[in-house]
Length: 177
Image 1 (spheres, rainbow, N blue to C red):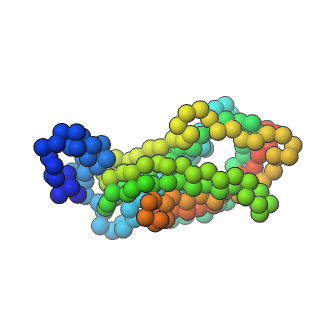
Image 2: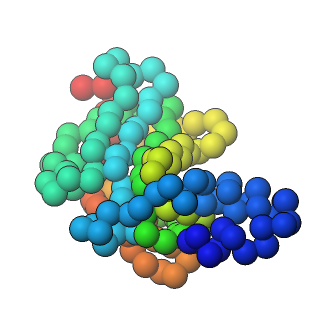
Image 3: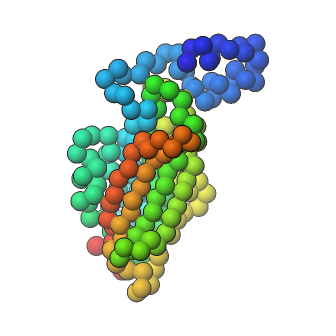
C-alpha cells in the first residue's frame, strides 16, 4: 500500500485521488488474526415513520447471522425505508464492492436489487453506505402484497469474491405489529 501511495507523488490530482480511495492507509495496520478483506459490521433498516425507530442488526459477531435469520421484521405496507450498511476494509483494496439482494415469496423471486457500493482501500475508519442515495424505497401495499418474504443478500466485488452472505425473513402487514 505504501508503494502504491508513493508512486506518482509529484502528480497532485493523482495524489488526491489515491488519498480519497485509500484514506490515511499509511497509519493503518490490518489485524493479522483476521484474514477477511471486508468486514460487514452492521445493517440498519431506516424507516421514515416507524414507531420505535430504525432496526439495527450487528453482523460481525459469530452468532449475528443466525440471530438475523431468526428475527421477526415487520414492514407496514407502503412504508418508506432505506438500508444502511457499515463495514470496514482491511488488508487490500476492494474494487467494485456490490450489494445484491434477492427477495422471494413462496419460493418465487419477487424482486432483485443490485447496489454498487464502490471501491475502497483499507483504513482504520468504518465506511457507511446508505441506499437508495436519493429518495426512499417503498414497501409494496395492498392485500396481495401482505405476507411473508425471504431475502437473500450478499456482498461481492469485481473479482467475484463473496465477502458475506445472509438470509432473513420479513413480513409486510397492514400495521407495524
